[in-house]
Image (cartoon, rainbow, N blue to C red; front, side, top):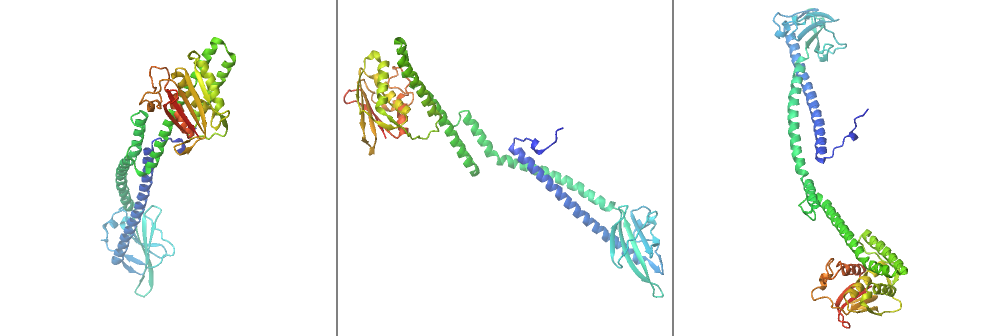
Length: 453
């Protein structure tokens, strides 16, 4: 058996929730208003009835003649209803103790009971077992001998007088309150739609962003929603940056694997197992390095391990000699025996490997690599400057800024992805260094200078 609980109700619409909640509040409020009004009207009607019965008592006293324990009234009574049996208005005059001295013709078959300890000259209003309103009044009359006799005048009236008025009021209240409630709910519905319009606008703008029609939330929103809109825009920007970074790093991964794959192709012809093993290990390191970069949050990471730059340069030169074996390259390497840098090994491999690979690709035969210690550039002190030169044609005038863009190449006829220099530029920027490009004064081709802190 399933029991109904509020938790079992699932209402997804915020506007519908507010409308139902306010509808319930209005229903409870109108119910309380109706109860208070009905109770107040009932009390007012009962008080009015009591005043009418008091008038009837005074009217009977004015026409009654009291003699000893007897009382007589004229045939024409003050209210014609006293003369009609079952009219709903009844009168009794009772002598002590509980002897009916007179009753109206309308009281035929109607019994009367007196309360105990009735205070003289005071009215007492009661409701009997038949749901009739009963008013008692006790008076003392003196006979000719000066002896006082107690008389109790009782007037009864059926409850339909009050009941009919209360029922009429209930019907009127229900119609009016129902109409007012419907109007208020309709007004509240319109106000809710107007109040929630900014939220619908945000949803519409988010859908436009999802379909590529907008880049961010740019509508005019209320001040209460501006913080939310700002957070959503920041979240959208961060997610786009993450997506762009994943794409870039996947492209970097593919670009980084080109050189090891080229070496492996050459080793397949000579079957050099040692070189193949070395390149496979290098490819595995590249994959782990690029995946680590892709998973990073984007903030700059400080390396805590020093790397020997000369060792990395020597390894890259040996690898590129194998890749470009058919060009019979001549490498000129000028650097100290040891050059320690606090940097990620993968970052140095990317910087040195990409720049040297480009030099080998574009040169005629000669490539020069030099490392200087503690240079000063643009009022800054750096740890090293790496210079890579070649005797190739160099970069055409006006193309230098273009090759720093991802996917752009100096010569579209040369095979490549156009991201090598971009990767180098991004890494050097993250490391806090500087990249310079120009014409080599000694070899006449391209010259790259990398300043690292």
